Length: 352
Figure 1 (cartoon, helix red, strand yellow):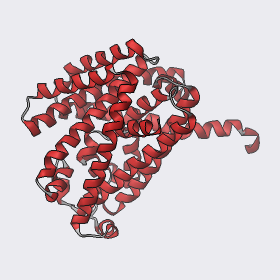
Figure 2 (cartoon, one colour):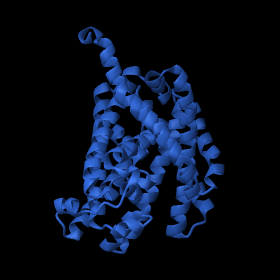
Figure 3 (cartoon, rainbow, N blue to C red):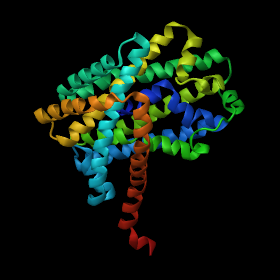
Figure 4 (cartoon, helix red, strand yellow):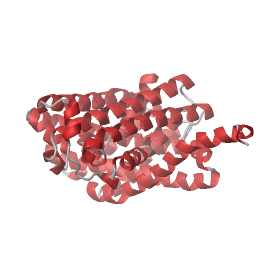
């Protein structure tokens, strides 16, 4: 079960933006010599938050994120976040479907509609397999994505001929997100925690406390390793890589033409696992006990996302991702300060 927890955490975070290298470019690499500082902060936060979410979820035996939200921010605010999270998960599912249409259109000259329908059908098929189907899909695909990204990054670093420390010390600062590496790394983690919280909290009743915490921490640590390696690889090819919509495409082309199609497949797999995570988050919230209702809700979510997906990948990202960041920031603050609040409440007599 440990591998399943780690895999579903990796699968819910490593989406299209991660696999293309664009997220890593904006939040880390463009901060130049400070990129690794931000990457280490992100590593700590991913590991800490993953372990904390699993600790709370297993302790409460939660079957969906609703119970966790109510605990973190209270029942009234929890209701609002519940509705917002459902809307965001549905929006995220539509973004992934649109992304499938865009990637298959560029790689295989498919029509956008065909790529969208394929993603909807495959995601529905996984959800029809229940929670076990979701876990099985991630166990197979998520480690493949992680190993591929890590392998490409290491190969690119070696091909550059520059020692890692030299890459960092000589990297120019080109102005990344937020203008400073510290808030950029925090924003990156908060923006990426919405889907993992929805997915990981649904496992609260199925894993032991030890396994859950270990899975969250290891999964977060591996995400950080991927961020660190991709940051080093990107730093090696600045400023050229920064001019690409898909920075990793520039890197793989330098490694050989055959790598380009492999990257296209990797990006599509990243989209697929994120789509599964979004659909599972919706289904587990509406049917926390699983069973037939879970399957119907999962397929229903895919059907509801289809009309939205037709608005196009770029348009949906531009509109929905700022909402992801806002909700993620609320979750991050709650997760970071709730344990502190509990600790001081339990130990008031020692601080008088």
